[in-house]
Image (cartoon, rainbow, N blue to C red):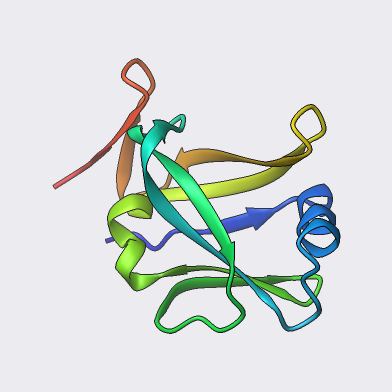
Length: 117
C-alpha cells in the first residue's frame, strides 16, 4: 500500500484559513464522498470538513500552521494516489487533482484509479 501525499497550494491554504476561519493548529479532514467524480474516481468525489484533531491519520501535512489530513479509514479512496489541492477563483473554493504514486495506475480514459496487485 502506497501512502498518499497531500500538497496544498498557497492560494488554497489562504482560502481554508480565511473562508473557514481555521486558526493555526486547526485542521481540515479530507475524505471520499458518494456521488460526483474526480479525475481518478467515478461515482465518488472529495469531501472536506473542519476537524482540528485527527484520530488515526494516514497522512498529515501541515501548511501555514494548519493540519490537512486523511484518516486511515479513508484509505479506500486515497490509496495509491497523491492529491494536489488548489484554489479555483471561478468557484471561490478548493479543487482537487489526483496523480498516481507507486501504488496505483491511473486510467485516464475511464477517469478511475486502478490499484495494482
